[in-house]
Image 1: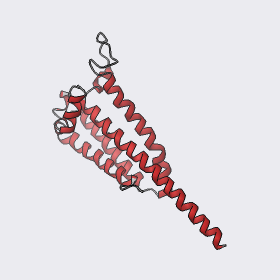
Image 2 (image 1 turned 180 degrees about the horizontal axis):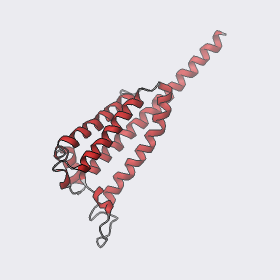
Image 3 (image 1 turned 180 degrees about the vertical axis):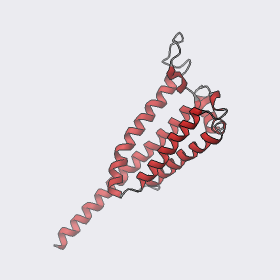
Image 4 (image 1 turned 90 degrees about the vertical axis):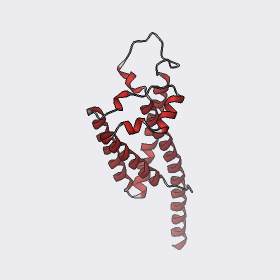
Length: 173
């Protein structure tokens, strides 16, 4: 049995999304000044975007997306156990894979990165290659992998309980 349930991890991640939403609306520079963003960005040699110095329409839109994500995940956490197990069992691997790919992309295609050619022209995707996107996607990837592992353990325990319940019902007849 896991120490922390998958529902608790998902609720914590949802509250993290709501917190990000709040900071993106009120003070985006608070996010760029976080130690984790600085340490991961510096260790991966990623630039810190200057566009997070002040609030902007883009940061407000991003805040709305994070708020929607947080509220919908909190709502989905209140589903019955069987339904929740199937729902999050399909969501966790998809989200984990997405954030793994995003984290890998940000690192691999950063300026002077291992895949990016020095003579390559700038592309619109270059705006993703920064310390904030990398830190966010890395933390999300870790959380969704943790949720995936915890869900797998909970699903196994649920199957054992159901088999035990079925065995007791058959013996009582």
